[in-house]
Image (cartoon, rainbow over all chains, first blue to last red; front, top):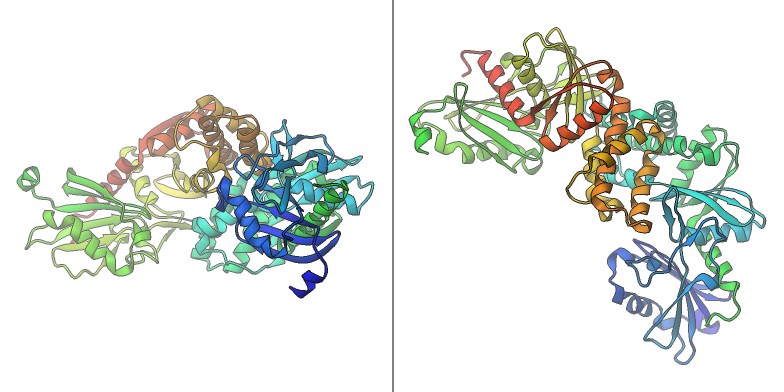
Length: 306
Length: 306
């Protein structure tokens, strides 16, 4: 706490997702303190948000000064703290003027929530990723190209002239979690570990035969029972089938492009291995770093936050 | 009980699956009593099987006479009561001589478990469905053609000259359950209800574009949020996407064939609607009836069971 008391924070950056609340206590662009706690929007009712925030932040707040809190993510959904209505694509990533104000009881905080983006046809939505896109654009001025925001619901995004032109979400990560943890395959796939060859074989296999997904999934179960096929290899194949099918579907995004991949290390690595197999050049960024970059960029677009 | 006491049972037919234990108290081919209880193999340890059976059956057992109990299903898996090793396809459905004997403490019962079938390439397995196939073959002498055993893990089976020549399993039913109950889609799809037009549209859509499964799944979520797309229609579309992808994959089985569909009414109806859209003629059987037919046929293949 000594370190913090020396430099006083002037704002707080928050990425409030479905599962987790991640925050950075900031002095301008410097991080004084950061933490992640498993109190995402799925764990909270409408009236829990302010208390949750204050509990986390109270030691950083000054008794007499209002501090800015800038939030991205699911806290801005209809079921979250307060709805921040989506901006329609094509659109620049949201700026501070697009953020909504949230009335708080505690006089020490002033809260704004950044809206997500929506696309009407084909219907698609994002919340949190728009801030990551802002982070990428802030780092790569005049960026024109494709971003793959990998995760539970991986999003392929085409950016041109500073605008999100279109995007497409695939439920790949959620399918992997459901199948590896809650389906009959849980007995056949390991909880961790990676076999690059098995993964790449499975990517190739499904990309040449998309229609067999449901059958190939059950093959994993049968192979583990009648051929004792090892669980780590099965896990890699499961991931390969799902990511491979996604690459078939997202081909219009990555074909002939260099792709910026944003995500956790393990999942980004898988996407990178799959894309390189298709001869696609990639560049990787860590999701939490890009979220903070985006929050900083949005915060700095306005001198007077409060 | 009066009815039962008049005619004494001479054997018990049992379908012991992952979720449920279903049994029929029989006098030759006549059902004296039947019941289903939620004590499938997933709820039981190796030593629970005999006690579970005796608790259900004791009122039907004679104190001095051994009664035959013929079981099909997951009770014969490695994790079940006692492993009944798979027969390799091509193979006739198992007969009574292929069933394994299970040693019991209680002198009033004599237990046999019917083995499943396995296929080495592509790796596949079944347990319980082989008995349904026997039921179909017993009803349709000289049957040559294709059976679709719909359910959690739908199995497409090619039968020729009384033998199962090949089969292919799709995880369609389990994917539907996971996605509708455990994924983010649970907020967007209803628990029941059916819209045939939405279902058939979704079947057509995915069959013409298999690669977009993961994306079309997320579209359902986005449509419900930004367009208030109704939950019953979403449920029908979800089912259509999954069954449509399966029909693309199982085309070598059903193309140019009449298909016998075995299953619960609701799921068989969905397969029928999807197949008829492809111009395929179908005939439906109820799964529990066909299981009993198969158990009867296998029991009757041997005069001396005990």
